[in-house]
Length: 85
Image (cartoon, rainbow, N blue to C red):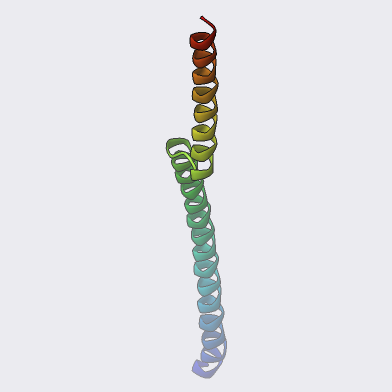
């Protein structure tokens, strides 16, 4: 009688243990996926904030060149007015 109980009890315990391990593994995967998604969202928000706050170096060079062209055009206009007037 005890031998029959042990024949069912031991595999039953193994089956239950395997099911619990599978459940915990799935929970860990779900948690890891959620953390990765939140990390990606945080990284995206951080990049948007950085790009919105700081101007890239090439944009600064273009702005500087445009300002210099405007100053040069303004000075040429002033020189022409001074020479003609």
